[in-house]
Amino acid sequence: KLEYSIEKSARHLMSEAYKERIKYEKGEKITAKQHETKILQDYHAELQRQREASMAWQAQLEQDMDAVCDVCYDGEVTPDNQIIFCDSCNVAVHQKCYGIDRVPSGNYFCHPCTYFEKDREYLAAERRDGPRTAPSPLPIVCELCPKRQG
Image 1 (cartoon, rainbow, N blue to C red):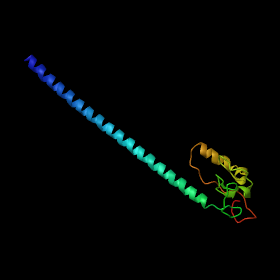
Image 2: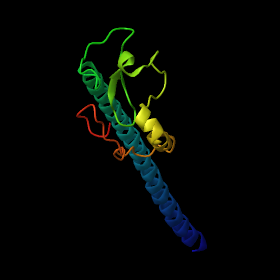
Image 3: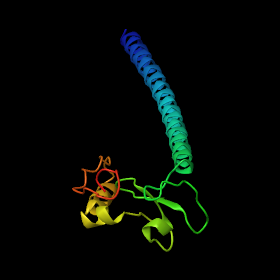
Image 4: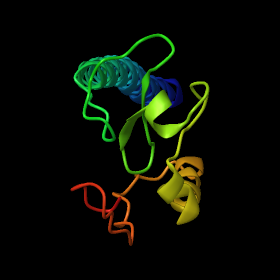
């Protein structure tokens, strides 16, 4: 009788261990599948971000091609007289109209933005990777042109 009771409990124990192992292995497979799904979702999200960035870049290029100088109201550009945009207020000026000898390799800020320290606000926002908010209006009234804020 002792052998029979041990055999019965051993069978029960083995059965429980087997069920637990099957349950564990199935759970691991689900986890691996969920992990693969997450990787694919992240990949597709990255592809979408890259597409959006490419579209934004293309839109900016098209806008740049349609740009008009805010000083002379001419859109013609030559290799030595490019239209440059202020990174803070987005004013567009020809190099020669604004007295810029060469196109800056980094950020460019117009004279009013530099004077009123809008350039520092912009660069600080860029350093902290925060959203760049629209710059506050410059306290300028230009008597020579109809453009507001200089």
